[in-house]
View 1 (cartoon, rainbow, N blue to C red):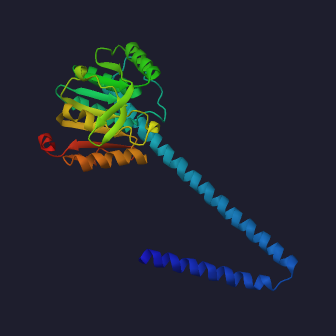
View 2: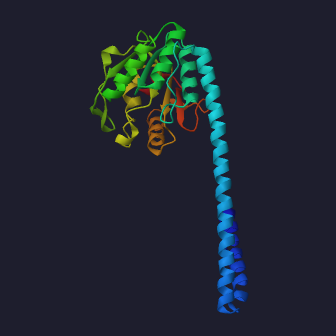
View 3: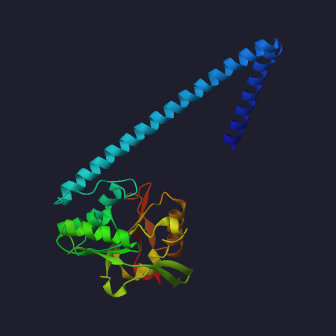
Length: 278
Protein backbone atom coordinates (compact mmCIF):
# COMPACT_ATOMS: atom_id res chain seq x y z
CA UNK A 1 0.00 0.00 0.00
CA UNK A 2 2.82 2.40 0.85
CA UNK A 3 4.46 1.66 -2.48
CA UNK A 4 1.20 2.44 -4.30
CA UNK A 5 0.78 5.75 -2.45
CA UNK A 6 4.39 6.71 -3.08
CA UNK A 7 3.99 6.02 -6.81
CA UNK A 8 0.75 8.01 -6.85
CA UNK A 9 2.41 11.04 -5.22
CA UNK A 10 5.29 10.81 -7.69
CA UNK A 11 2.86 10.88 -10.61
CA UNK A 12 1.05 13.89 -9.14
CA UNK A 13 4.33 15.74 -8.53
CA UNK A 14 5.45 15.05 -12.11
CA UNK A 15 2.12 16.30 -13.50
CA UNK A 16 2.38 19.48 -11.38
CA UNK A 17 5.95 20.10 -12.55
CA UNK A 18 4.97 19.74 -16.21
CA UNK A 19 1.98 22.07 -15.69
CA UNK A 20 4.12 24.75 -14.03
CA UNK A 21 6.72 24.37 -16.79
CA UNK A 22 4.17 24.64 -19.59
CA UNK A 23 2.22 27.67 -18.27
CA UNK A 24 4.98 30.24 -18.98
CA UNK A 25 5.52 28.73 -22.43
CA UNK A 26 1.85 29.14 -23.31
CA UNK A 27 2.20 32.89 -22.66
CA UNK A 28 4.91 33.17 -25.34
CA UNK A 29 4.31 33.75 -29.05
CA UNK A 30 3.53 30.61 -31.08
CA UNK A 31 6.96 30.58 -32.76
CA UNK A 32 8.75 30.67 -29.42
CA UNK A 33 6.48 27.91 -28.11
CA UNK A 34 7.41 25.67 -31.05
CA UNK A 35 11.14 26.31 -30.58
CA UNK A 36 11.01 25.50 -26.87
CA UNK A 37 8.93 22.40 -27.47
CA UNK A 38 11.41 21.20 -30.10
CA UNK A 39 14.28 21.79 -27.66
CA UNK A 40 12.39 19.88 -24.96
CA UNK A 41 11.73 17.04 -27.42
CA UNK A 42 15.43 16.93 -28.30
CA UNK A 43 16.43 16.77 -24.63
CA UNK A 44 13.87 14.04 -23.99
CA UNK A 45 15.08 11.96 -26.96
CA UNK A 46 18.67 12.44 -25.84
CA UNK A 47 17.84 11.26 -22.34
CA UNK A 48 16.01 8.22 -23.73
CA UNK A 49 18.94 7.37 -26.00
CA UNK A 50 21.37 7.63 -23.07
CA UNK A 51 19.15 5.39 -20.97
CA UNK A 52 18.91 2.88 -23.83
CA UNK A 53 22.69 2.81 -24.25
CA UNK A 54 23.15 2.22 -20.52
CA UNK A 55 20.67 -0.63 -20.63
CA UNK A 56 22.49 -2.17 -23.57
CA UNK A 57 25.80 -1.80 -21.74
CA UNK A 58 24.37 -3.47 -18.63
CA UNK A 59 22.89 -6.28 -20.72
CA UNK A 60 26.25 -6.75 -22.46
CA UNK A 61 28.08 -6.87 -19.13
CA UNK A 62 25.61 -9.44 -17.77
CA UNK A 63 26.07 -11.57 -20.86
CA UNK A 64 29.86 -11.35 -20.51
CA UNK A 65 29.56 -12.51 -16.90
CA UNK A 66 27.35 -15.43 -17.95
CA UNK A 67 29.80 -16.33 -20.72
CA UNK A 68 32.67 -16.34 -18.21
CA UNK A 69 30.66 -18.57 -15.85
CA UNK A 70 29.80 -20.94 -18.70
CA UNK A 71 33.47 -21.14 -19.68
CA UNK A 72 34.43 -22.04 -16.11
CA UNK A 73 31.78 -24.76 -16.08
CA UNK A 74 32.96 -26.15 -19.42
CA UNK A 75 36.53 -26.13 -18.12
CA UNK A 76 35.33 -28.22 -15.18
CA UNK A 77 33.52 -30.65 -17.50
CA UNK A 78 36.56 -31.07 -19.75
CA UNK A 79 38.83 -31.55 -16.74
CA UNK A 80 36.53 -34.08 -15.07
CA UNK A 81 35.42 -36.05 -18.14
CA UNK A 82 38.54 -35.93 -20.33
CA UNK A 83 36.68 -36.31 -23.67
CA UNK A 84 38.63 -38.07 -26.41
CA UNK A 85 37.42 -35.62 -29.03
CA UNK A 86 36.29 -32.00 -28.78
CA UNK A 87 32.68 -31.62 -27.72
CA UNK A 88 30.33 -29.90 -30.19
CA UNK A 89 30.17 -26.13 -29.97
CA UNK A 90 27.65 -25.04 -27.36
CA UNK A 91 24.55 -23.15 -28.52
CA UNK A 92 21.92 -21.30 -26.56
CA UNK A 93 19.27 -23.94 -27.28
CA UNK A 94 21.37 -26.60 -25.52
CA UNK A 95 21.26 -27.40 -21.81
CA UNK A 96 23.06 -24.84 -19.67
CA UNK A 97 26.58 -25.89 -18.61
CA UNK A 98 25.55 -25.46 -14.96
CA UNK A 99 22.78 -28.02 -15.49
CA UNK A 100 25.29 -30.39 -17.08
CA UNK A 101 27.63 -29.95 -14.12
CA UNK A 102 24.79 -30.79 -11.70
CA UNK A 103 23.83 -33.85 -13.79
CA UNK A 104 27.43 -35.09 -14.05
CA UNK A 105 27.96 -34.68 -10.30
CA UNK A 106 24.75 -36.66 -9.68
CA UNK A 107 25.98 -39.48 -11.92
CA UNK A 108 29.43 -39.62 -10.32
CA UNK A 109 27.93 -39.64 -6.81
CA UNK A 110 25.87 -42.81 -7.46
CA UNK A 111 27.27 -46.27 -6.89
CA UNK A 112 25.50 -47.75 -9.93
CA UNK A 113 24.03 -44.85 -11.93
CA UNK A 114 21.03 -45.32 -14.19
CA UNK A 115 19.83 -42.34 -16.21
CA UNK A 116 16.73 -41.59 -18.24
CA UNK A 117 16.86 -38.54 -20.46
CA UNK A 118 13.77 -37.18 -22.18
CA UNK A 119 15.12 -35.75 -25.41
CA UNK A 120 18.64 -36.20 -26.70
CA UNK A 121 21.64 -34.26 -27.95
CA UNK A 122 24.63 -32.51 -26.42
CA UNK A 123 23.60 -33.48 -22.87
CA UNK A 124 23.40 -37.15 -23.88
CA UNK A 125 27.03 -37.05 -24.96
CA UNK A 126 28.18 -35.32 -21.77
CA UNK A 127 26.31 -37.75 -19.52
CA UNK A 128 27.66 -40.73 -21.45
CA UNK A 129 31.18 -39.42 -20.74
CA UNK A 130 30.20 -39.14 -17.06
CA UNK A 131 29.11 -42.78 -17.03
CA UNK A 132 32.38 -43.77 -18.69
CA UNK A 133 34.30 -41.83 -16.05
CA UNK A 134 32.30 -43.70 -13.41
CA UNK A 135 33.09 -46.98 -15.15
CA UNK A 136 29.53 -48.30 -14.95
CA UNK A 137 25.92 -47.40 -15.50
CA UNK A 138 23.66 -46.78 -18.47
CA UNK A 139 21.76 -43.88 -20.02
CA UNK A 140 18.58 -44.28 -22.02
CA UNK A 141 17.49 -41.25 -24.03
CA UNK A 142 13.93 -41.18 -25.36
CA UNK A 143 13.67 -39.22 -28.59
CA UNK A 144 10.55 -38.59 -30.70
CA UNK A 145 12.43 -36.75 -33.46
CA UNK A 146 14.11 -39.26 -35.78
CA UNK A 147 16.59 -36.70 -37.11
CA UNK A 148 17.75 -35.68 -33.63
CA UNK A 149 18.00 -39.34 -32.64
CA UNK A 150 20.26 -40.07 -35.63
CA UNK A 151 22.50 -37.07 -34.87
CA UNK A 152 22.91 -38.11 -31.23
CA UNK A 153 23.65 -41.73 -32.16
CA UNK A 154 26.33 -40.51 -34.56
CA UNK A 155 27.89 -38.37 -31.83
CA UNK A 156 27.95 -41.29 -29.41
CA UNK A 157 29.56 -43.51 -32.06
CA UNK A 158 32.18 -40.90 -32.96
CA UNK A 159 33.15 -40.60 -29.29
CA UNK A 160 33.05 -44.35 -28.64
CA UNK A 161 30.32 -44.12 -26.00
CA UNK A 162 27.68 -46.53 -27.33
CA UNK A 163 28.39 -48.88 -24.41
CA UNK A 164 27.10 -46.27 -21.96
CA UNK A 165 24.20 -44.60 -23.75
CA UNK A 166 21.42 -45.60 -26.10
CA UNK A 167 18.98 -43.39 -27.97
CA UNK A 168 15.54 -44.98 -28.21
CA UNK A 169 13.07 -44.00 -30.91
CA UNK A 170 10.00 -43.09 -28.86
CA UNK A 171 7.33 -41.48 -31.05
CA UNK A 172 4.67 -39.48 -29.27
CA UNK A 173 1.38 -41.25 -28.61
CA UNK A 174 -1.68 -40.71 -26.46
CA UNK A 175 -1.29 -41.94 -22.89
CA UNK A 176 -3.96 -41.97 -20.18
CA UNK A 177 -3.11 -40.75 -16.70
CA UNK A 178 -5.38 -40.08 -13.73
CA UNK A 179 -5.23 -36.38 -14.62
CA UNK A 180 -6.30 -36.93 -18.24
CA UNK A 181 -4.91 -37.89 -21.63
CA UNK A 182 -1.61 -36.55 -22.97
CA UNK A 183 0.64 -36.98 -25.99
CA UNK A 184 3.93 -38.34 -24.69
CA UNK A 185 6.70 -40.78 -25.47
CA UNK A 186 6.13 -44.43 -26.29
CA UNK A 187 7.72 -45.85 -23.15
CA UNK A 188 9.99 -48.90 -23.65
CA UNK A 189 9.23 -50.36 -20.22
CA UNK A 190 11.26 -53.55 -20.68
CA UNK A 191 14.41 -51.58 -21.46
CA UNK A 192 14.34 -49.34 -18.38
CA UNK A 193 17.11 -50.22 -15.94
CA UNK A 194 15.49 -49.49 -12.59
CA UNK A 195 16.08 -48.00 -10.13
CA UNK A 196 16.76 -44.77 -12.01
CA UNK A 197 18.99 -42.27 -10.18
CA UNK A 198 18.68 -39.35 -12.56
CA UNK A 199 15.74 -38.20 -14.68
CA UNK A 200 16.54 -35.35 -17.05
CA UNK A 201 13.36 -33.75 -18.42
CA UNK A 202 14.31 -31.85 -21.57
CA UNK A 203 11.64 -33.08 -23.94
CA UNK A 204 9.36 -33.36 -25.78
CA UNK A 205 9.75 -29.96 -27.41
CA UNK A 206 7.91 -27.46 -25.21
CA UNK A 207 6.28 -25.71 -28.16
CA UNK A 208 4.17 -28.76 -29.07
CA UNK A 209 1.71 -28.29 -26.17
CA UNK A 210 1.57 -26.40 -22.89
CA UNK A 211 1.75 -29.45 -20.60
CA UNK A 212 3.54 -31.87 -22.91
CA UNK A 213 6.32 -32.51 -20.36
CA UNK A 214 3.98 -33.00 -17.43
CA UNK A 215 3.69 -36.85 -17.80
CA UNK A 216 7.42 -37.27 -17.04
CA UNK A 217 6.92 -37.67 -13.29
CA UNK A 218 3.62 -39.62 -13.15
CA UNK A 219 4.77 -41.97 -15.94
CA UNK A 220 8.26 -42.65 -14.57
CA UNK A 221 7.81 -42.28 -10.82
CA UNK A 222 7.72 -46.01 -10.16
CA UNK A 223 11.17 -46.44 -11.74
CA UNK A 224 12.90 -43.76 -9.66
CA UNK A 225 15.26 -44.60 -6.80
CA UNK A 226 14.77 -43.04 -3.37
CA UNK A 227 17.93 -40.96 -3.90
CA UNK A 228 16.98 -39.97 -7.45
CA UNK A 229 17.02 -36.39 -8.62
CA UNK A 230 14.80 -34.92 -11.31
CA UNK A 231 16.35 -32.22 -13.47
CA UNK A 232 13.63 -30.23 -15.25
CA UNK A 233 15.12 -27.98 -17.91
CA UNK A 234 13.64 -24.76 -19.33
CA UNK A 235 11.76 -23.83 -16.15
CA UNK A 236 12.30 -20.19 -17.00
CA UNK A 237 9.29 -20.79 -19.28
CA UNK A 238 5.81 -20.46 -17.80
CA UNK A 239 4.50 -23.85 -18.94
CA UNK A 240 7.47 -25.70 -17.46
CA UNK A 241 7.08 -23.78 -14.19
CA UNK A 242 3.43 -24.86 -14.10
CA UNK A 243 4.47 -28.49 -14.61
CA UNK A 244 6.81 -28.29 -11.61
CA UNK A 245 4.06 -26.73 -9.49
CA UNK A 246 1.70 -29.57 -10.44
CA UNK A 247 4.31 -32.21 -9.57
CA UNK A 248 4.85 -30.65 -6.16
CA UNK A 249 1.11 -30.43 -5.49
CA UNK A 250 0.35 -33.98 -6.61
CA UNK A 251 3.47 -35.59 -5.13
CA UNK A 252 4.15 -33.78 -1.84
CA UNK A 253 7.12 -36.04 -1.09
CA UNK A 254 8.98 -34.17 -3.85
CA UNK A 255 10.78 -30.95 -2.99
CA UNK A 256 12.85 -28.40 -4.89
CA UNK A 257 16.58 -28.39 -4.20
CA UNK A 258 17.14 -24.63 -4.13
CA UNK A 259 20.89 -25.01 -3.82
CA UNK A 260 21.22 -26.86 -7.13
CA UNK A 261 18.40 -25.16 -9.04
CA UNK A 262 18.99 -22.13 -11.26
CA UNK A 263 16.92 -19.64 -13.24
CA UNK A 264 16.57 -21.91 -16.29
CA UNK A 265 16.18 -25.31 -14.63
CA UNK A 266 14.80 -26.86 -11.45
CA UNK A 267 16.15 -29.78 -9.41
CA UNK A 268 13.69 -31.96 -7.50
CA UNK A 269 14.41 -34.62 -4.87
CA UNK A 270 12.39 -36.94 -2.67
CA UNK A 271 12.04 -35.11 0.62
CA UNK A 272 10.31 -38.10 2.24
CA UNK A 273 10.20 -41.84 1.73
CA UNK A 274 9.05 -42.65 -1.78
CA UNK A 275 6.70 -45.31 -0.39
CA UNK A 276 4.67 -42.51 1.19
CA UNK A 277 3.57 -41.40 -2.27
CA UNK A 278 0.90 -44.05 -2.46
